[in-house]
Structure formats: structure tokens, C-alpha cells
Image (cartoon, rainbow, N blue to C red):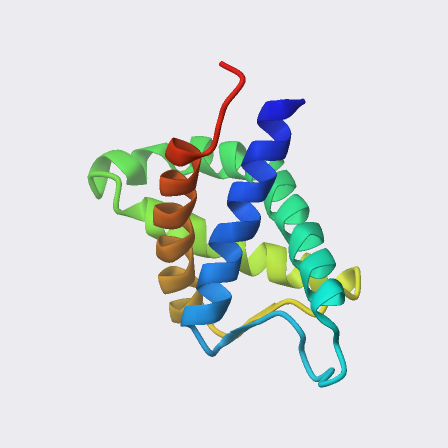
Length: 129
């Protein structure tokens, strides 16, 4: 349970950094009246959704694209991470969470930022292992 909370907080922090750095990744959408509490709750819900997408969908996509992983020496990971971020954006829209990623190249850069920040936070945050 502790590991789940740590990973969710790391995802939320990494998503927050990507939102802060990239203007085409937005959290509040068109709502100028969103409070800080609403933004934090939305960020945590999007982090949970992102974690769920990475847990359920990403392994299947990696298995199906395994030859491309070998052929590109792993660089296809950037594309897979971008697709997971775009899927999270689409699902967030379906759940009315006001999180949006505009465009594939923004998703590639956002996925890279999220991967780096999430890795760093997982190193720093406590783990139950």
C-alpha cells in the first residue's frame, strides 16, 4: 500500500512539473476559478489515471512493439510514453478532469520530463522494499 502511495505521489509531482514547464499540457482547462485544492485533487486523480494506464496498457504495448524496442535500441520508449500520456489525456477528458495534452510532440517532451522527474522522485521518496 505504501508503495502505491509513493508511486502516485511521484506521478503527481512529475505531472505537475510537466504541466509547469510545458504550456501545451494543461490541468485547469478553461476554468479560471479553479482553487488550489481543486487543482491538487485533479492532479492526484490524473496521477492515479496515469498510473492505471501505465500499469494496464503500457505492458501490452511494450510486448506488441518489442521488435521496435530492439531495432531502435529502446528509443521507441519515448513514443510509447507519449502515447500513454495522450491516452491519459483522452481518459481524463472522458472523466471531466480538465487535464489536456495538446499534440504528439508535446506528449513526447512531456513523457520525457515525467519519466525523468518520476525516476528522481522514486529515488528520493521512501519505499516499502
